[in-house]
Image (tube, rainbow, N blue to C red; front, side, top):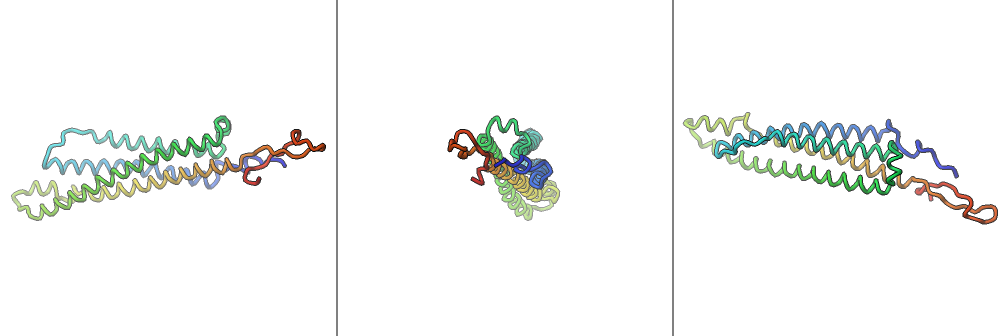
Length: 224
């Protein structure tokens, strides 16, 4: 039985699965960059309010923003490249390593990177919860402050210094980015699993004299 052509077994670069994965990757990149911007803005506002009580010194918050954006972009590029490899677009390199090896490496690598992103999201939740407790106590305190402490009250309790919405938007953007990365990671695992299941194998068939070592046919694992 002749084996099916590669184009029938693997998705083309214009297939819906590839387009959906690329769209998910773009959404993840945009939301993660916006996530880092809002997170840094919230941390700066939080630090400015904390410095009303105690000096925090100089800390380069833009380094955190750059590190978060760089980490997310590297993660998304990695997942997209591996996903394109799983769709038979880099067949020579994949065949050299083997589909099973690529499936293991891509799954392990993407899951470890996703775990790191989930830890970042948990850090946002922890800092956001701490800020909610802090700002709640500050508003209760500001209700008791008279006009003699007007500057102190404006620093802590003015609407422009309230970072609650920034922390909320940060968490929402981080969640959207995590969903986009998870979509691409699932597409990687599915594509490699489908490719492994449809890889051709050699199956011996009886020859004219009953000799099975002379003739072979190519079949799919899924159909055997």
